Image (cartoon, rainbow, N blue to C red; front, side):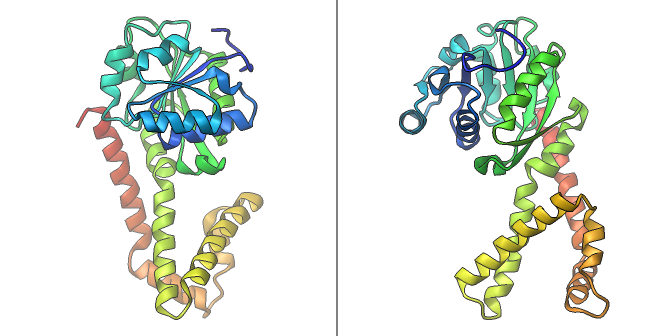
Length: 277
């Protein structure tokens, strides 16, 4: 594999063709990072492969080894529970001339590196589901044999689906809990907001629209102002007003502490996955 900047001639192999793999394929093609015919995806679901081939013009195969043989960059997009089986299949096939990127939650780089017979460059990536609409955030961690050029290639690939940050491996469990699982926390809040709106007379359509646009707008506001969340919250919380009344209830019910505890639970689960439990 030639290192450095990705080119339209680079060949990408996707092991697993689920939702996140599709998001990456869609973003990579839209950004012109490589041509569709240079992307090969494998999966046990043949109907899924047929659909992806028709939708994006990529190549598809059933055996995982075919993607490994094809790829300059191999992306492991399978669930953590399945990854050990995949690694056993690929361990003797992948070479040190390839770059392997894993998006499996809870699978630490040392564990991944032990699966290969040679000094394979590895990058661990944690994208989140807004990647489906090219608004995700992906954290990258470099393995022992991954150099700056390998990381640059990984950055280019994931920029196709949103923003990219780089963190050390020891922080990936926290990243997984905060941004990887984070959209679910926001959806949980939105669910409660929508339920309250419905209970107090708003139509289903209007309640959904108001909640979606409020959350979208709040995210855009904080992104543009670069202010901390508590500063913006205080700005919109007038003394004696409706927002203050609502926030007081959230504080009394311990919502802040509950969210912190939820993230701590997700971190613990990520670490447990790394231990195979």
